[in-house]
Image (cartoon, rainbow, N blue to C red; front, top):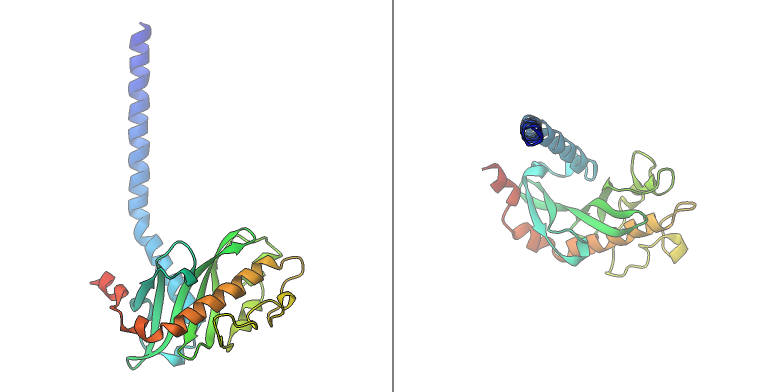
Length: 212
């Protein structure tokens, strides 16, 4: 009697597990295209924020290469989008990560011209403290706009530090770690893009291959 009851309950639990697993898989399958479309739309919007649309006429999200260079941080390879005007190289839009944020990794997108000047920077993902470190995000403050037009002149350009460290970039009251990490990462990514500009444009287009 007891064994029969246990067997019956086990069968019910198994059936419930199968139904639940199937439902989750079905939901994922149905929502995957919508999520992919939303991610693509967000990417396109972010790419257009860091470089003026008058500077290029190719579709940025369809032209990219990848790099695992240490200057771009952990979790590589990192994607680098290429801006062109009439098929001529204009800028590299570099995705990079700094692991030195107060609350962990900060994902960054930096657009770099050939002369190592910066078209724009955006923070694409972070877990920094609300009201303090999250001021690196454009929705919270305009601090990130201070990179616009700045030029990195060397690998260790001392201007690319927060003012507390002798540089030119503001830190936040009560939160120096976050802006320090971002400035350092932007400097490294910009110099990498400058030093490898022609080589990165010479590589095969990975994004175009993904659409074939």
